[in-house]
Structure formats: C-alpha cells, structure tokens
Length: 97
Image 1 (cartoon, rainbow, N blue to C red):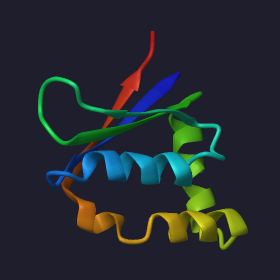
Image 2 (image 1 turned 90 degrees about the vertical axis):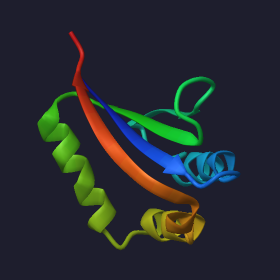
Image 3 (image 1 turned 90 degrees about the horizontal axis):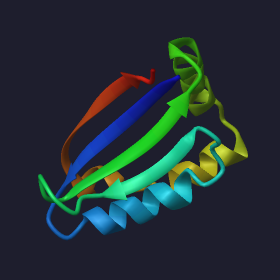
Image 4 (image 1 turned 45 degrees about the vertical axis):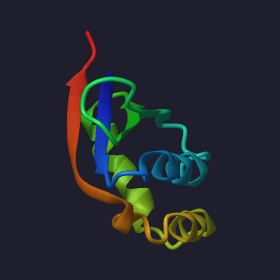
C-alpha cells in the first residue's frame, strides 16, 4: 500500500479555509483518507492524506483529473482561488509495510 501526503504551507489565517475547500472538493474521492491541519510543529500546514494499492494505482489516479466530467467541474469551482491561500508545498510518498 502507498500513502501520499500532499503538504501545503498556507499564508497565515488560511489553513482552516484551505482544509475546508479540500474537504468539500475531495468528498467523492475514495482515495482520500484525511485532511489534517497542524497542532504542533511547523505552523499553517494542511496535509491531504490519500492511499493507493501501489504506485501504478497512484499514477492512474491522475487520469481522472484530466477528464472534463461534472465531478471535475465541481472540484474546479470549489477550488477556485486556492493557489492564493498557500505559499509552498511538497509531496511525500510512503510505502506501508
């Protein structure tokens, strides 16, 4: 199994707003495990946790974002302006043993 952490370092005051956007936009995706905000450590972080059977499944999951489906249109509408809410980000991919 593969666990992916998409990490966003938000502008002050935007972490909870971005987390709510992600939660709404990703509500129909079975890969989503959690949307988390920091309680300790680096401030203003939002971490989106997803899981996949393997790296092939992870790569294949990107195909749905290229579709012009109603689901993707809804996601785009919900996520409008999210780029203005964070400063930087990163991705961590872990193998679960």
